[in-house]
Every structure is written in C-alpha cells, then in structure tokens.
Amino acid sequence: MKREELRKYTKHLDRDLACSKAGLDRQMTKQAGLYYYYAVAWNNAIRDEKRAKLRLEMQETKIYRQISDQHSRVTERMLLSECHLDKLWLKLKQIVNQNAHAADVLKAACQALIHKRDM
Image (tube, rainbow, N blue to C red; front, top):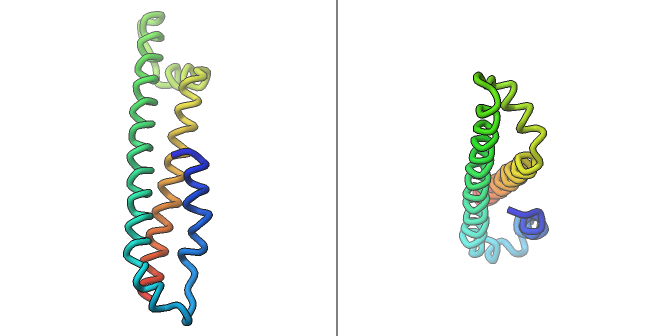
C-alpha cells in the first residue's frame, strides 16, 4: 500500500471515529459500513505486505545463489551483509515495512471502530 493510499484512509479516520450524542442514530447506521470499509482496506494491506515479503525472499534467494557461486560456504552473516548492499533488496525491504505499517494502522482503525460501537 502506497503512502498516498494510507493518507486517504487516515485523513477520514478522525471524522469516521468522531462521536456525538446529536448524531448517534446516524452514526449507528453507518457503523457496519465503516467497519467493512476499513476491514477490507486492512486485508488489502496484509495482502500487499505478503506479496512484498515474497518478492523480498525471492531477491534474497538470488543474492544467496550469487554468493554461493563465489564461495563454497555461505554464512547467514555473509548473506545479510550482501542483502544490505543490494539496492533492490533495500527497496523491497522498505516496501515491506511500509505495508506492515499500513496494516497496523488499519488494524487499529478497525479496533477503534469496535470500541466506538461498544460505547
């Protein structure tokens, strides 16, 4: 999930979580729809995170093969140091971290909506 997409969700989150006695009936009728909206976004973020992790693991495998062609014995430390030097691996790692962050934020949004419902 890109930063712009996450900003779109978080921008409206304050409004969606706001609660007032004056509009309680309207808020109660919108609650299920809001929860569904954020739950779908959360699941999409989890899916994106898993896809990014898979791409990262594939890049690690490529790096491992390159190292194993050069050295008879590859240690975990060698692999990690080569990964940290690889620009594509670093970019993919950043994408994994961004997607994990988005999933965490959207999970918190869903939990906040549950708390709002229970009030």
